[in-house]
Every structure is written in structure tokens, then in C-alpha cells.
Length: 324
Image (cartoon, rainbow, N blue to C red; front, side, top):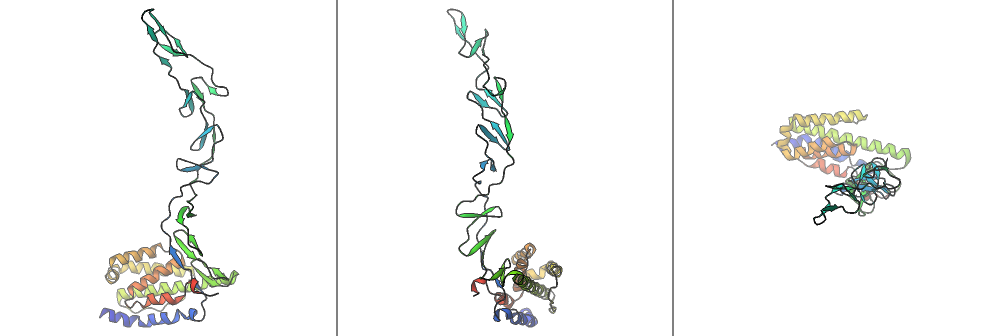
């Protein structure tokens, strides 16, 4: 009984959508949606540009010869016979060692490089290496700043960098933006982002704005009215074209408010999991194309006839089906 009432109440609105929306396409498309497909989740680039060296997960300018990198600093490499202790090079010898005892002669002796001090052998002072500051025991390492490190940006050969992450390269005639590969526009058409419009220059740009704006408004209005109808069993309100982006934003806000207000009824209609997924998609929608997609999905879910979803598929063709 409920579905029969819904079909009767929705028939005028859905019929109008199916008849009116495809008119442009029948007359010769003045817009097309780019074909697209997902290419998976992006990964962090593993390598640095050729003019950088990867250290501790970041890309730094390589230090000059004779120096070693430590984050943003380059420190002079310790000479032979010394060990790196950070800002100093410490002599690689014990400062004291035990003497050898000759019982027969009752005497002691020290190894080479050490001075006999009776009960112990003490390291004999030596000249520090030329060009170094400090003492012969601890040389001061010269330093200079090489700048901050940059995040790795070079991907493996089978991937490309998009917005800082590595994605699988798109197939021919597709270009990638983040996790999505988008098809190209027909020759002589203007790129509208997720779609294309015939013409170039200001004419093409104006047509992009007009077509996308009108279509998005119609979709959002239809979704809002159908959601209200399912929740309240009321009559669909007449929709008007959007005059500015503020009106579109208000319509989206109204739709979100209605979905929250009638959450229980809509969950009963489409299922809790589907409701949650559709709500999240609408909440994450930013661009007009994303808003259109999310809103039409809601309209299709709450429309028991499925005609709204069918109508959306014929509104405009994908660009791979357009002959310039």
C-alpha cells in the first residue's frame, strides 16, 4: 500500500524529470561527463629527487665532500684514529692501560703510545691533526646548515605522483587526479572539471557553469523533495533554478537537515547501513559534481520505482560517447 501510494505521488515529478532532463542530449549534447575509474589508494613516495639524499625518511641537500649529514646539519667527518661522538671526534684509544710487570727485574713497561706512570700507563700526548680545533683528545667538528628536509616525492616507475602520493598510472587517454582517473574531453570542447562542454574560451567556460549549476540544482531539489515525501507522505514541492551558489548551499543544508530529522523513517525505507553511507557521501561532497552525485544517489534510494536513478543515467552522456 505504501509503495503504491509513493508511486502515485511521485509519478508527476519523476515523469517530468525523465522527459525534461534528457532534452538537451536529444538535441545534441551540450555537455558530457568524463568517463572515470578508481585507481586505488595512494602510497607515500619512497625516493628523493636526484639532487637530494634520503636520510631518516626525509630528503636533504647532500653534504659537501668530507662532511656527514645529521638532520639539517653537515658535520666534518672524523679523521682516522678518531671516533664520532656527535659534535666532537674522540681519540680512539684508552686514556689509561695497565702496565706489563716483569717479576724477575721487578719493573713495569707500557705499550707504544703510552707513558709509564708507575701503577698505570697513561696515553702519551700527540699533536692534533692539521686543520682541526680542540685538543688531541677531542677534536671539534666543523658544521654548517644545509636547510630543512623535504618529504620524498619520487614514485616508482610504474606510478605517478598526485598531490603528494603515488598512484598507479592511468591507462591511455585518461589523466589522474588523486585516486581517480578521468577521461579527456572531445576535441574542441572545454574542460569543466568532471565534465566537458562544447566550445572554447569564455563561451565554453560559461556553458560549463550554466549546465553544471542547473543540473546540480535540479538534482538537489529533487532529492530534497523526495526525501521529504518519503518521510512525511506529503506532496513534492515545485523546484526553481538556482540563482547563485548561496541558494545551492542552502538547498544542500536543507537536505542534510531533513535526512537527520527523519532518520528513523529513512532508515526503515533504505536500511541503516545504506542511510549511513549516503549521508556520509553527501557530507563529504564539496564540488558541484560531487553534490550532484550524492544527491541523486539519495533520490534513487528513496524512490521505490527506481525511475529517478534511471533518469540520471540519461541526463548527459559520458564524453567517450560524444562525437565532436
